[in-house]
Structure formats: C-alpha cells, structure tokens
Length: 362
Length: 223
Image 1 (cartoon, helix red, strand yellow):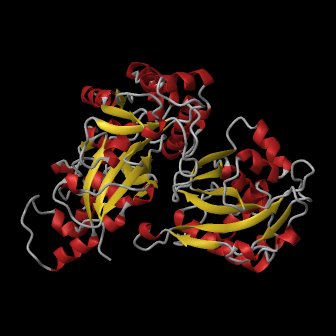
Image 2: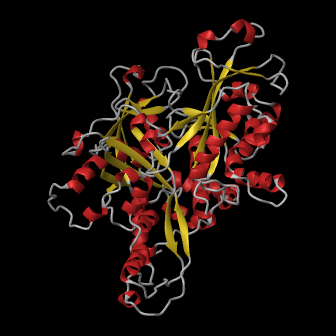
Image 3: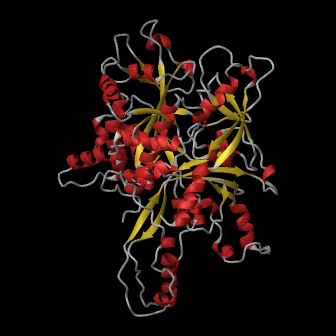
C-alpha cells in the first residue's frame, strides 16, 4: 500500500466520537440520579460493544430485572448494526460534540429494532456484511466461506478491538479482489500523445464492470437551509431512504486504451468515457438519478453567480445534493470514486455514505 | 441484447428482469392459484429510477392454522386465505378447529437483492391481535423438512433482519446458493440447456422457495 493510503486507513480506524450517555429517566432507581457516562466510541465500531464501558456507571441505579439494552438519540431508537460513525454523520447534521445519547436497559422496542443478543449478534452482522461485500466484489462469497473459523474469529476480534495491525495481518486471508484505483495507476489516462489523432490503434484494454459495495443513507429536506443547525430533527427512520446497492462502473484492465483516429466528436466521446475519472459524484448519481446535476452547469466554476434562465429553474425543481459525508468527512464530489472506496471503506469492505438532499419539487 | 433483462446464465437476474418476472409471476398466480389472493406489486415511489420502476411483490394476511399434533405436516397444514381487507369478517367458527388453536397470519414479500442479483423472500407472522410471532412459534407452522434444515444447517437459513424498505424486523430466507439451484433448475428443465425465460424465473424460484414456508404452486404455473 502506498504511504498515503496507509495513513488514510489509519485515520479511519482511529476515528472516534465522544459520547455522553444518559440513563433513561424511567430507569433511574437511585437518588441522586447517576451522572452521564463519557465514552469515546470508535467510528467503525458498534454501540452495543460499548456496553461493558457504560454499564459500570449505571449498574447501581438500575431497577431489578434482565437487561435488554438499546440506545436512542432524541427519542429515535438507534439501529445497532449501523456503525457508530455512520449514525453520527447521518443523524447530526450539525455535529454535536459530545454526542448526547440515552441508554435503556429495559423495554426493548422489538417492533422496530431487530433483537441484539450481545456480541454474537454484532459479529454475525459483521460477517454477513463481509460475505455480501465479497459477493459484490468477487462474484461469490467463497473467500469468506473458506476462511477458517479461527481466522474469522481473529478478524472480528481485530475490528472489535480497533486493532488495525492485527486486521492488516489478517486481511490477505480474506482474499478480496482489488478495486482498481485508476487514479494511481502508472498508465497515463490523459497523456497528450495518446489522445492526439494518431493512426495507431493501441492494444485494446479489457473493459469490465466493477461492482463496489455501498450503503447509502439518504436524508431529505423539503426546504433549503442556510446552516446545518437549521436542518429539522429526525423523528422516524422512515425519513431515511436506505439503499444497499452496489455501484457499478467501467473499469479498464491493462494499460492501454483503444485510441482510434476518428472524427472529432467520436474521439471526444472516447476521451470522456475512458479519459475521465469516475468520481464520487458519478457514483452517487448512479444510485440517485433524480439528483443528477445538469452537466452544462458543472462545467462552470464553483460559486459562480447563476443567472436565471430555463436550465436554472429545472435544477431547482430537480433537487440537490446538499452534503455528502463519509467517515465524518464532508466530501468533495469530484474525488475519484475508487480512491474514496479504497481509503474510506469500513472493515467489512462496505463504503457507508450519508447524504443530505433537498428534495425535488414535484 | 434483450432489453427487458434476460436472465443471466448463471442463475441471477437483473433489476429490470425482476420487474418483468414479478409481473409474470403475479399474473400466473392469479390465473392458476385460485385458493389464494393475488400478489400485489408495491412500487417504491421515492426511488423511481428515470425509466425503470422498482418495487416488490406482496402477499399478506395468509392464515395458517396448525393442528395440535406436533409440528405441521404438509397434510395438516390448513392454509387458507383471508380475502377481505378487514379481519372482522372472518368466520372464526369455520376456521378454528378447537379452542387451543389460534389463527396465525403471515405476510410474504418478494424483494430483489441488488447485491446478490436474486430475489429474496421476506416473511413475518403475527397473531390476530397483531402481535409478532417468534421464530419458535413460526417453526411450528413450517413443514417438518424446513425445520430439520434449520436445525442442521451450518450457515444461517432463516434469519431475522430488517426489511430493506419498511424499517421493521422481518424474517428472511438466506440468499446464498440461490443462483446455483436456479441454474440446476434451468439445466434440467430444458433439453437444450437453455436458460429459463425471464417470465418463468420467479415461478421456478418460488416453486422451491415457497415450499420452505409451506406454500405450493400448482403445476400449471410452471408452463
């Protein structure tokens, strides 16, 4: 791995969110009520894994009975199988630090949340997501099925403990195919020589479709807003569109491209197809075509004043991508998608993307 | 290239193919499976792609009565359909065999998995007061062959997961291996080893999957 890629992965693994966890008032059986627990939650981890850190704060205050633990944020029950960092990026438009959550030890809302039976449930969810990602990338999940039980255990333990070194040692055993990072490949995509109308026909590069595991969480607002703190709070998960769907894009194999001497327009199309990078914007637009930005407008500089004309009106009614967050970073959409995937994916090989959109006016 | 989305050779199906197959499946079911209500196509409104319509198939409020003699065998499974929208119009004196039996209601959704490129069956059971049934209770309503698979299988067979669109816990049949047995089905069902036409994909799929949850389809649908 290139030095800067190693750094990026390190930042992802070290990313954490300070939590301030309050015991739900209906469960406070002591006086005075216990102060909130302060916990640093790994972004790539899951909330129920923190219970052993939180419970000591509250165990003397709990009413008698069996624990069935769940969390809520401003009344919204939190889905425990979504990585903590993703929940934070999605639910806090304006990042709240520390993030105030409420913990419950009773009254599990089993009509809305799937049950969580401790670490086993989370491990099962992790391995299942890994299998699904493997299926998307490799075309089958044999690589995960063929891993020994102890390797799977060790892999999970490395994620649970946030141990990047252990994970890096184990990941070759997963045998996940590479998602080609066209951005860092030596063959110059846009070298001037290859594009000028020479009559040479280069060795054809095999063009394949790459499938990349993506989980997209889309939150929409109906009105535009000035500041993120003006974004209304979420009352139910029905306000989120969850898309668990791979991004497909053309991937070139080999280092050469078909360059034919042809008429100008066709050459331009070839250059556009094979010369332009597949960006994060392209990826999101492929999943959310109703938010495709009018290409004519993207060619201008950012921040340019828009004049009112027919195309502007249609842009407003079309809807807009307001914010895209991955691993807590507000992403510039022109970044090559393959770089984003290879550097910002979660340990189960999924890229989790939180998107805030302004709805199209229908 | 068939733009309706022909079934890919290795047993998988595209999203477009699924939409076509779903409509065909629902039509055939309506025509040949008269003891059941029809499947409905539920479109995903806020996810409408530019020219494609996405959605899933839904069959709801199917009543299963289990007899008291152990787990439900195929013969004693009395699967009836609740035609009406309201539960009050069920004639309970006809359906309930004795006091200890209670009617279990089941909803089935056939949803497309973009990751695995195959359909998946989601289902849930609930009693007449709407309270969800646990897997233990549901197992009693399943054919005994399914129950033994559940016990023996190393990999998870029926799992409780969140419905991809409804934000509620449902049960799901594990998709791993689907494309393999669909491939087997298509190879064995035609002499020249042709693929299953897209219109029959879901019919073939359901002929296997439906049996796991005790729903059989009449032979006429397979033509």
